[in-house]
Length: 233
Image (cartoon, rainbow, N blue to C red; front, side):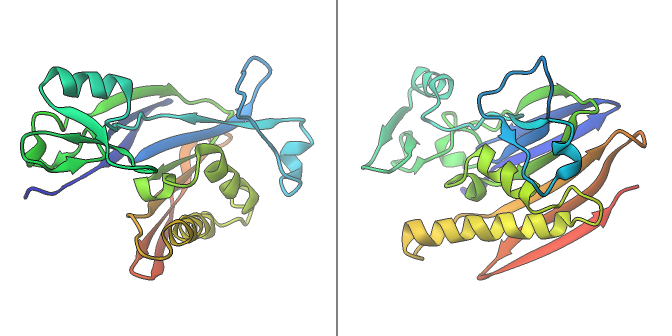
């Protein structure tokens, strides 16, 4: 097929989290902010998480994958070195990569999209992250989630949904996140267009020595939101 897709996946090996991605699906991780950690995008704990707030802790967000888009300096350099070119077609439009086919794409790496080879490649980029007791949860989501929501907004939605407290629902948090992304698309495009909206949320818990403890997924299906959840003990 001449069409393609993006992908992001993580593998936990002991206390290391390896994340690989192709395209602009993204993985972020949210953790308790410690004294020796500095992040200007730290999120204050909301009142609803009293057991954490009582410890005087904040939250911080780390992006564990890099979006592969033609506007990225490293990706653009690779594309142009190989004979392709990058352009923006109009105001508010993303940078697109073009080759000899006349077909433009807003991602610089994907699985498929053979018409734009070798400018759009399928080589994944992998990161390694050392997990510890401060790590709370991670989110893997397709590009439709990130188009109008940034990392901090997405993490804040999960925290403020009370998904992390005893009795909280990761399934509900995933639904809320996908619904919010869908609302943003409808508002920005007058309901004319909506990209793929899918997310997976996993909560970590080192107290019992098992990671992860809970996982939930949600994705948009037509005008509705389908969601499934599972307990991992």
